[in-house]
Image (cartoon, rainbow, N blue to C red; front, side, top):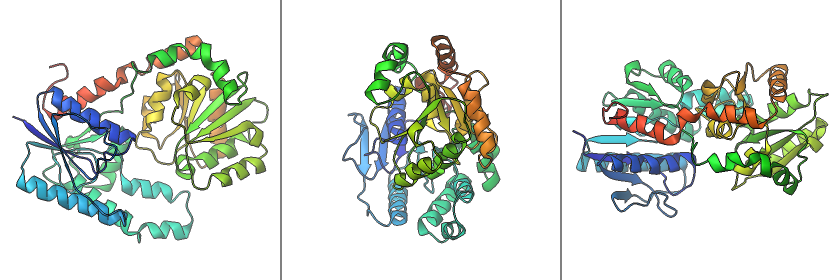
Length: 384
């Protein structure tokens, strides 16, 4: 019987999706009466704050990154050797865990997707860079370790990629799509029609035109260049695109928009702490990413009533249907992207359509998806 659980999360001092998920998983196990310990590397801004969670932290070097990963893995191995646990739940790439949530997907596939958009010298560097080599090494150990009992993938796409790249027993892999804070977003959703006009005007946007929304850090991998070029092919329709997120070469994308003749139809907002006002303004979210195991913004946008345009290489496309979104068949074909955008333009957000889209992901409420994972780890049927 499972009593003591150790969570492996190398960084819980950040505020990203995986770090927040670690906190929720810890609480989920606590709610089942388990003793929970967390192994990590830093707690300066620790989101996991619960008196019943024991946190063990190691100080690692900041650079180089590949050695920091190795330091944490060795720390975890030593700790688990000295303090055996009933269940070891990993959220990073570590050599050993009994249960592993592959939230970062498959790095081998990530590198392959990068080769579609990077120069030949950059592609060659992938297999010389010690960080990539370390990640691939740890990933192989994690996926192929005989002691692994359950491997959670957040999309069927990731499941297929694991089986393609590694010798993993298919029966060990369980797909649980990312959850969304469906109930928590309810108030912001219900007032969108009332606040949309002022929210747009406050940000210098015209509330009368169709609004596309792009959210993502690292514009190249997220497909912004392809999106801008495809938007330039749309001549007759009125639209505006808001770009949220950061990129060290953001000026290049502004220059590209200018060269394409659509600069006046694009607003680069950079990183934003509050994203929901942009969901309230937008009609459609576009996720043309070259690799996303499951982009959380997919279900967030759906929960806010937006039509979603996704690439096939975003695992989140698996929750889309003709009623709530569309999938770009080929990211390397600009006409293909443009056609998907035209489909979105035929679905402006209305009170009726937004409600229907929101209902399509009610089943993915975060608490429900978390319980699926917790019960699977503990060998329980859902609802028991």
